[in-house]
Length: 472
Image (cartoon, rainbow, N blue to C red; front, side, top):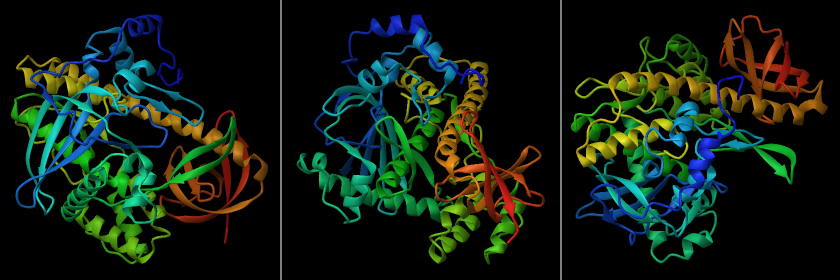
């Protein structure tokens, strides 16, 4: 982390400032409302404690539903210019490694006082979304409120219940009416998802490996896959971020947008599609790409994650950019949306905390808390630090994978090429789902090519995994 310009420890002034915070904020942010009695619940990873958002659905006349997304009011305890804020601004993100989590905010805040923990009453910024039966966002609003998390739920357990593969989790069953509440949310999320894909949003499925421990011993890497509960939260957050962006623009406020430009390597995506029997236009088209991906997912679901990974690599990475009111936003190619910011995770992403401060200033009629020049510089800084944090996470993940693979030198694997540039060629094997460098035989390989490789070396300390290509 230090080598990449990230700070792994909190300085003394941050710790002192944290100790001086007596408790959670108890009054609503701005002209707040008391919404504690609504059936709010969180859905996150099993072990997550930094809970940033809660959701609840309120059916309206007709088929419309009001979806409320409550975002933890981190700014209430972390004011701009404080020592805690300076540290968060330096790192800009929490860093999640296989060895340890390095939170953006001290844990007293992120997992307690500013976390929307179960049975806790907390201040929140609420994003209201009115969704029609066809998935259209009909209205949107933002306001402060006091909320209470009635149940802390986990993705996998909720997804299994929604799919009818398992009984309701105990935390869900313990709250009367919460089962119907989540079914409504699931129905609305599916409608939002369908409409987004009709408009060209890409349906991708990549395999994310997480470390599995037996006590302190690393025993494996387990694949995390998408499911209905993850998609429910994802679809609501995309909608909430769109409402947020439009609200700030309506108020004449600038914003930090999350953008993903049209892919520079579209020609290679066209070639990959042709190899799979598909046909894409010469110019980038998110809708055409999504139609091709949907067809491949149905035809070959087992290999779809590999195809998704290739497309993700070729699409490139998103970035933060300053957007001024009234200006045409660049938009997000992968999500097929024009208005998109990051606002829903202020405990672990600094751009979201910036957005929260902009929202609260707009709500209370105060001046914009950041100058345009400051926001532009922060957009670049947050993009750079996010990239550095991702590299740290990947390096530690590779160290974990190297540790698991060091006894398997000489083993052979099927792999897919995930990166090809002047710096080298990389490929990912499936079991375990890890990536390494093709140190021999990489000539003429490109992203998406399928190869047979032999493991020829590992370096646990540096996270190196080396493969040699085997001619079939």
